Amino acid sequence: MKNIFRLLVFFLLIFQGFASTAGAAHYYLYFPLVFNADRPTAFSKSSPANGATGQPSNPTLSWGTSSGATGYEYCYDTTNDSSCDGAWISNNTGTSIPLSGLNAGTTYYWQVRARNAAGTTDANGGWWSFTTDCTPFDLVFLSFGDSITQGYMDSNLCSYPSCGYPIRLYDRLVSGSNKRFGFYNVGIGGERTTDGLNRFLDTITNPQIYDLCPCSSCSGGNFYPEFCHSIQSEVVIIMEGMNDLGDWAANGAPSFDVIEDNLRTMVLTAQQYGKQVIIATINPVVPLNDHRSQQAQAVADFNQRIWQIANYFQIPVADIYSAFLNYPDWENHLMFTESGDGIHPNDLGFEVMADAFYQTILSLPSLSR
Image (cartoon, rainbow, N blue to C red):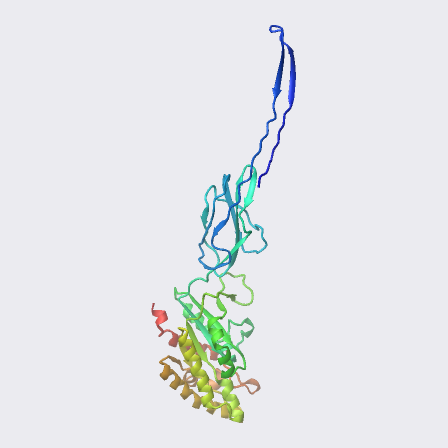
């Protein structure tokens, strides 16, 4: 599109009189002088493609050439408002620019414009977007289970998911290590293994990741959610069955066979999707009443089946049950017993769980790379 930015027309006829020496009149005729300057011609952006995902934190923006351009300016930000919320940055005559230091798992919006003395021309297609990938992790673990995994009765439950054993396991992994870890806490309170199995595949393939907050201004505890479709769990930790066994203690159902089959299917599914699996024994129950006494015996008996599952699939076991029983006066020190609970660990109980998981996860090939 052309822009006539200046039109100077001079029609000037000047009569200067008669030269005494020549005896003739002198006329100076100035013809119209028109300055017609054009803005740079249309051009397009090249890469990253609009809507691209999984981009590195140092992508290179590139675009085509615009005829008549004497330079280019670019802008990028994280606000989807089709405008430059920062400042347009000159790239002289270059048609590409490497960026650096972008945040992981973040969507950026960018545009470039050509310029000359007549004005600017935005690249075709409006503002484009791209999303950076999550920072690579050395290991990401997913903690799958019920309210015990979720962190119920943890004094930091309000900071979910940074509670329960997952956050404490995370703390042990990052302490004194130069490796980068991430975790998913996907425990759901009150869940039985049949319900867990129904959500298992979707949960391990489309989870939400939580990683250490990089600044002191984060809200909602010390952790923040960073959703990245391209990052999935590498290690799946399965600890579920307490609620099934509570039902069994009350009415004899579901059967041990059903619970075992559900857990076996979870392990098989995780392995089919390339996950390393850790299965955990269920923590002991404090026999506060007849129902809890029957549930305590059911847990002790069913844990033998968990060992059989582990042997069949050749996967490691985090023996939470034995870790609790081996702790002096575990009923009073590790368990929440108010209101007849007796099944949920307290803060110290979650610490003991994290120790057991930590020792198990250290044996995985993921940490030997």
